[in-house]
Image (cartoon, rainbow, N blue to C red):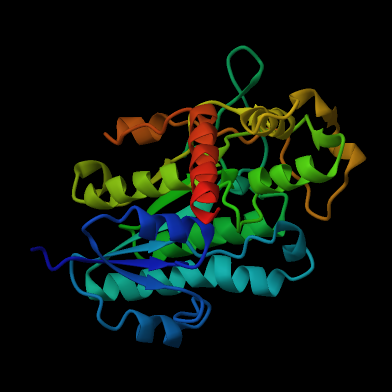
Length: 305
């Protein structure tokens, strides 16, 4: 049996939970916020004291309160920027490898394709100056991790959902609102890449097993999202359809009608080409993933009855 160990930082979060659930026979050490404070280098060193050559650390921790970050930049940067740097420093010293999960918010503005329309982002597109504190912190974290350990692999993802009963992601929120409102209005002028946390977790494990391939030996930045794109409005309608509700009860509205402290990108679709070109299995379509997520939720409900 291999002595290789895997460490999941942020094991108490939505992605972290799915990483643990899909780990299979791997030897995994889960690290929640009670076990490790990534903003404190001393805490990181203590939590990863047993880290050895060949081990893999998956960083699924993040300060994800996008709006709160606008007025609490210090806390957001401590987790999203200092945290990855601390992890990378400790990982490099041990001869291990770091997979760091990042976000579509690192990009500054949509890119135009040959036809003059917005096109999906590629990993090497310019990031510039993100429009939000959250995005700026995540970009700083990517750069800090790569500077501390050039073999770091950064995985950018977007619009992550689980649909789980005990979660507060967009899909679960829509299910709750369907029960309490005759109609609801959802933004229809923001387009992104909905991504099922379980599919992302499975992809990250495949990546972890492939770190010795040439594509990742010296580090890389790749995108991992479910295929296809959607607006929040379209995603909400799909949720209603899945649970047997009338999707027309979800009405479109504009971003301007629902201003938020942190501006949301109008278009942040991530290209999946880098993932496929690295020899990794493409994630299924977001629509198929949503169906799987809500089928799993329904099965859980049956067990609880």
